[in-house]
Image (tube, rainbow, N blue to C red):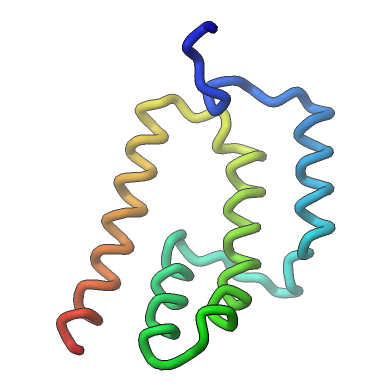
Length: 107
């Protein structure tokens, strides 16, 4: 074993196309899709469930955003360095924390 994680290997162009095609088959992006910063859709889903929306309905609302994030990662994120990945993860966590903490304090 080389010790390299799968995330540290570039995808072959054919594999990338196949994965993106599979994702498109799962759910094409809706017309006019506006991709706000990830993970704001996660916070929206969390709030929806906390206000009485079923988890299944919240998941349906989150699904296109999640698939978009996966597509984005496959297309460009795979080329990020481990340091850039850590910074992106920390920034996403900070956004989620900032968005959810006021909502938690208001309840």
